[in-house]
Length: 338
Ligand code: EPU
Image 1 (spheres, rainbow, N blue to C red):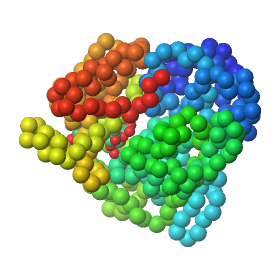
Image 2: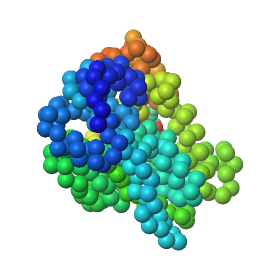
Image 3: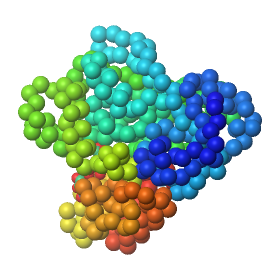
Image 4: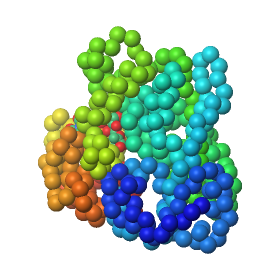
């Protein structure tokens, strides 16, 4: 493990925030992670493990060690006539694995095309889009315990996946490094096109026979029309979570605010689109200095170039305060703040 001093993190976070890491290193193998756990000096440093850097906002220089998980590998564990089991390295880029799996004729990842980030980061918040979540294809993952170096396997139940949630965001926060994720993909149909705009997009494209490729193309078209490309415009996807509120509160709110959309969540609760609340509160497309709210999707905050993490954080504070004032709903950030 080579340690670099005073490394800019600009290229390592999709917001494109230019802060420095005091120390920077890369893990290229599971052994690198285990070696790290046996090094008391390195372990004593404050640390931040990076995947694709696509779900974080860096608000200051990082006084400590930043480590990029770069563990690669795509292993075919087993297959039969209906399905394949694949073990994917935690450092693999999610979307590259999606495209590769589709090219092999395997289904299951297509709805989650173009989600930025890495394979190892995907379970942390159970990433999802267009009616599918990581948990739908998940078999297990391998993680190294940072303190002991023990390699542990977590099955579906042990991960306790929820909406943008898992044990790795809660009880085990910061304790494990996810070194591989094992997924199950199918060779036959079982497509999910129920999410509104996918059907419309497939029709527009004149798709007659449903395939993973056709769905992936539709999802890519939809995402590109709403979500900015981080290479061109720094962003972290959805900045806020969609709030889940008691159904009784929703019934009250919909009287006052006509057209407030909602989707059923767990028993007695409704999920309200944060994008709608922020949009209706007048923030969509608003620019504040070098950052702002995306013109095509109010859930996404963008860096027009040269914004600091602090500026983007302050903008998010103003949005949260305004939405509380107008709707009595407290938005929660989806991105991690450092
Ligand atoms: N809406 C507006 N104005 C906006 C944006 C949204 O009124 O500017 C309303 C519309 O009524 C729309 C509804 O909000 O029908 C929902 O919007 P959309 O379908 O764009 O999805 P979302 O709820 O905003 C979620 C995920 C996305 C994921 C999409 C598609 C969260 C926080 N976000 O967004 O995930 O791609 O669904 O499945 O759950 C991400 O996590 O980074 C991300 C992009």
